[in-house]
Image (cartoon, rainbow, N blue to C red; front, side, top):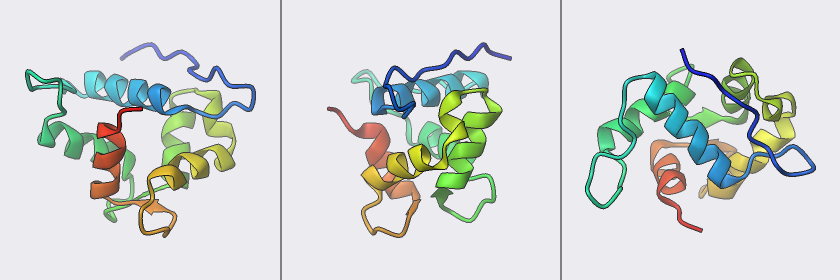
Length: 114
C-alpha cells in the first residue's frame, strides 16, 4: 500500500504531464516495478507494458479516458472527478485521434520530455 496525495496544482484541477509521470512512478512502485531500469533513465519496455496494463483495465489494448478516470478516482485524486480532464490528457498524445491511447501512444507519452 502506498500513500497518494493530490497532485493537481492547476486551478482547473487538470493533471499536468509531470504529475501524470508521478502517477506512473507511484504505480510502478506499488506493483514492484522500477520505472527506470537503464543507466540513461529510460523506461524498461517491460515496466512500460506493465504500467500500460494497469491503466488498460478492460484489456482491449487501449487506455480510454474512462479507464484513466477510474485509476485516478480509485487513488483518491481529485483529477478523477472530471472526465473532461482525463479526455484532455488522452488527447494530447492521441496520434490517431480515436480518443484512446494504444501502447505506442502511451510509450510516447511516458518518454515525452517538455
